[in-house]
Amino acid sequence: MLTLEKFEEAAEIVKKVTQETKLVYSRYFSDKTGNRVYFKPENMQITGAYKIRGAYYRISTLTREEQEKGLITASAGNHAQGVAYAAKELGVKAVVVMPVTTPLMKVNRTKSYGAEVILHGDVYDAACEYAYELAKENGYTFIHPFDDLGVATGQGTIAMEIIQELPLVDYILVPVGGGGLAAGVSTLAKMLNPNIKVIGVEPEGANCLQASLEAGEVVTLPSINTIADGTAVKRPGEKIFPYLQKNLDGIITVQDDELIVAFLDMVENHKMIVENSGLLTAAALKHLNVKNKKVVSILSGGNMDVITMSSVVQLGLIQRDRIFTVSVLLPDTPGQLVRVSTVVAENQGNVIKLEHNQFVSTNRNKAVELKITMEAFGTEHKNQIVQALEEHGFKPRVIRTSL
Image (tube, rainbow, N blue to C red; front, side, top):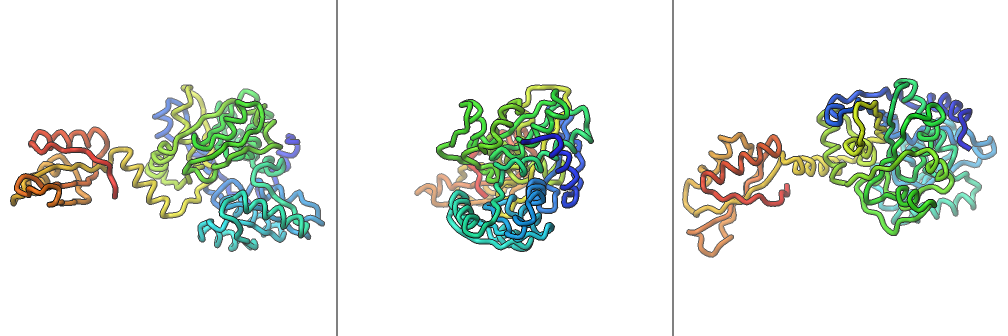
């Protein structure tokens, strides 16, 4: 069971491997929401995510015989690194089965913490099934990413730290994948102060816990689709589900587009890199229909590869109308480009790409197409530039931006 005694024990044990992640007050998100918003930056942990807590506590509870035989897990992300690091610190052999599609960076990082990595299967489910087979063959203890009460106990230590630092917290927002973090945090929070509201946040395209809570039993989604890969789970944990039913006060779902702009907000206003799953609670703040409350959003991790990061930044700028593209048709005569660029410059647009297509029409004397991709300060500035082009007779057409 998840007990206060175990939570207190775990809180002391995980201090051996965790960084102190003090709450970060967000003036930006506070002003936007009308609440006092704080972030719990678990993206600052040594492995880049909160998973080290549950992994270390769970492994510390193994018997000497179990530790001598070793352990195994399956993961393509933060749990793999958390288990690998925790096992190394405790001197236990660790085997991690990862799908063959796992990015090389994650594979190498898991190896660097001392784990034996086995690549098997195209998806997590196949890797997990193989891990169970190896556990049975070799006597390894399987450490489940979320459906394990020991793991959930370790994750729940986050709630204790939040309440110690902000005793009068009103709301805690927690990301949900399989539900281990949410089970631990919500259960301990209710034990310490039943008046605290704990809200789970899921991707709209992977809302397995919301569906299960509505059904009154654990259900499996037929399919999932989200950029929040760390919380892309079809089915929540069976063992932890009763705790989620009892202690969660609600579920908020977030669209992928909201995560994209949340990433931009976090980078520009807090200078923090937070992965898509970790941004769920930041994106959910605007959906919380309360005012003048103390709200803590748990940022669960920050492990995002650079290519994904660059793509998210670009999409965020486009969504905020800070990058946009217009198409104008011009006579194919000298001086037309100067006319257009002068209008853009006078309205403080910054051109970042030009495409000049002379073959848009068979009658080149009548029209060529000029596509201009430019930076703006936002929607109002973008509209100002488009209006100025219209006033100069260019008939601009805003088109889908692609950099």
